[in-house]
Amino acid sequence: MALVFIGRSLICYIGIIPIAAIFGTMQEYKIWKTTPKPLSIVGHIKVYILNVLWCFGTGLAAISLLPMWAQRGFGKSAVSIEQNAVMENLVATGLFRAIVGRVKIVNEENIPHIALHNPKGPAPIFIANHASQIDVCVVYYVAKRFKWIAKESVKYMPGVGIGMILGDHIFIQRKGKNGKSVSNLYEESNKTIQSGIPMMIFPQGTRRITKRLPFKDGAFNIAIENEAPIVPVSIDVSINAWNSLYPLNLLWGGDDGKIEVTMTIHKPIEVKKDTDKAELKTRCQDIIYSVLPAIYHGSESESSKDGNKTNSGSDKKKH
Image 1 (cartoon, rainbow, N blue to C red):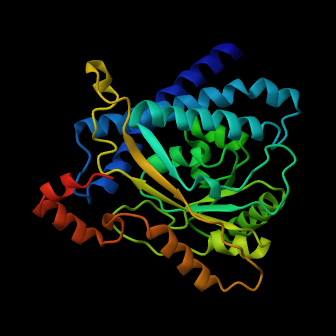
Image 2: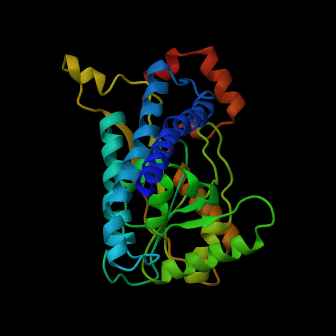
């Protein structure tokens, strides 16, 4: 009976994935509809496939680590290295390459060396602009091991949730009386940085392409408290990243994956206890946006109007 119950529960759990992927696709659609190149039918299909495979991939990867987790005593971070540095990395970079294309990294020499075993703190904090679900995949090209800060609800996402738990990532309750959650966020973040494990943070707090959003304080509070260096990263996602025919074009001898994302790694910024937070935020935002195309700087309404007025102009400049 127990096996039957487990089997049925597993089937129900897997059955949620296609439904969850619909919501993920709708969220990405809302982001891209304000651009000159909203998601096409092909784009919608590719986003949906990535969401489905992301849930399946992270879930299967995490399940494969359960025997090791049990052998090591079910500790909170018993398999965090294997989950974060190996499984998450393989799923993220593999799906990006299979569905979207190639990534180009500019100034790769600015990426600090990060030891997987016995790292020394304080570790760096990577911060980047956040425009698309694509960002979550490509940041794994920059650092193999790091911790995310995610909403508490992510724990319950099929596949993704168990992966986040085994990866020992940090969760926060965004709504309601979350004073304790915020306090725990900083406590866990400080421990992470001091133990030598980097953090990856999108200081905008949400995805946006056609609007330059102000950075929130979180990443900078953590950096100042721990005197941790900040590494600004600019993520430039091509306006045709989702709508291209890749990988279907491989069937008739097309390009095996053009560069759809360019990531610029800026020089690490030294942070001290007495660093002015407001100046630090402004400096980091200016650095990140300094190499991004014009579409990332305008207001949503202006970008939509420009996109409706002319498609020829946007066709000439593909990023």
